[in-house]
Length: 420
Image (tube, rainbow, N blue to C red; front, side, top):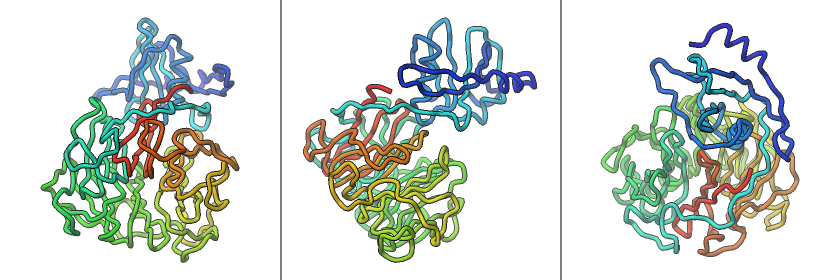
């Protein structure tokens, strides 16, 4: 169990190291001879990998979005990566073979990573064929990565269903966890399901663009389950959920606004836009994607599709808040400083943006405060393994591989991390 002595150790054992050729500043607290131990809840790592040195174990942790700590086993070179520290840090045991390292808040600095330019189809048809079987998709849209269970939750729009897909044995057969009861606006149906997500209790949320509603389903739901109406929003698109508070952020496409259901209940409140269609810094124009970064920047990001830009709003923003253009905003185009129909955005622990640039069929990376982006995958339309066709949403898995919903190719593509 953690003691006062361990807490003092955490204070005094801070190190700063220059790691590798990228000269990153890496600050981690080291506890030599200690390991995580939980009395009531297992301390399961999000990943275990073999690394040759403790420095490489540190680098592996810093290269993954969800990693907050790592344990290096000297005798086996096993590197365990951990995400949630709330349970583990209060329970420690001695083990002379293990060094445990914890990322110090505010010091994480990621290198500029690269990904394979050719993808593996992990679900759907590699050739782009649509279908309604449990191994095929028909115009997939939103996607959520369930990191603890290593599975995807995907909105399969033209099949009016939400699928659960395991990544432990890909390619796999999916499970229907909502919908698949024909087209309609009943609580067990969809007409145009776009956004999808899970809250911290495992409740499922689906946003139906044409039914103007956001529906909540209980955990372990299936096609026979009827949900409950969370709220009505005009043309809801993608969803983002703050896992610490269960605030539900939803794009209101036709109202040019971002709404929040505080704590996952009540009436939605406007937290960005809502001031008519326009390109002022308090306006949006046909937004599609939203991402609330509750882990690192505590900010709200919006893929402002028809303004061809990504906007950033501070935590606690309202309809009167003016945002900041953090990518694009230079007209529609395929230049390095342009976007053309951005659909979704995610942010890593270093504040770098990853943007699905739909009409350019590419994923763009914008470093913090950059005026130009870089294409990291895609860039041409087609069914090839290095091509995309109207990509819709993206996530990173536990190994920092890039997963992309390739909508009109009816597939989910994985671009493997190659260097970091």
